Image 1 (cartoon, one colour):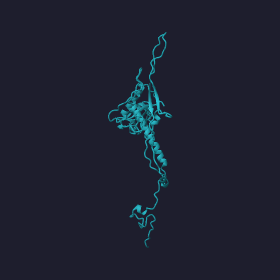
Image 2: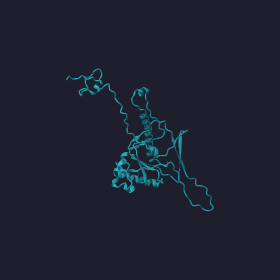
Image 3: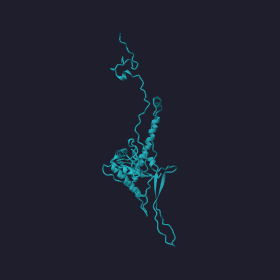
Image 4: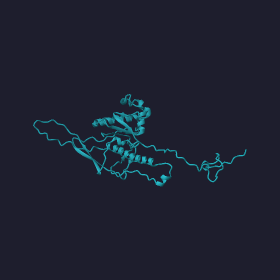
Length: 287
């Protein structure tokens, strides 16, 4: 029997005479269509959670928002016959937040490219634009919380001053130490109690590695004193809900050991600071 001569449909100008393994793949199949898989590999995108842990106000028809702080009042015994004329309390202070410049994320899709492409990127680009805006928003909130923890209270007059923020030192190299983190939670709860901060609305945000350090060391009993038998499903990674009455969440958008963060053009509020020792955030919101 004679050998047949193959017509190689996938090659250009008879570059090869067969599809045998000795011929280059791209050469013998050069005219065949590259099929789109139907799936776009999406980048892992960090979850934005800060928006739901703070008070939110919408600025409209103005350039800034004014927040009023009121201090404490004192009680005293009344002497019969003396008029009750008031004490002048409570002291009042304000905090003004101005509007930053317009925050944008953009991509230009040329109409011809969209016509020629056998896949659509518009939906994917739209999602990434939304995520970029949300992530920038998240990071600014967490930096603001960190800076507020170092600041004094706006009320300085008697019967104040009112207590400002507080920082807790875990110790050198202790940012992933589960026992140090749990002790930090209880110290934070004590400080918040001493400042008469309501128990509802207390939230802590950790980096993912800190969170899972706590989950993985639950068996050491450092959490049992708070949870008892209510740790949840540890295998799912959702085994921690709260410690010392402080709800726990995790985020990649913390300024975690971030070093110095400088101001950017367009920021009319100050989000800059030295975050080289910042490891977590514990906050209160009565939204």
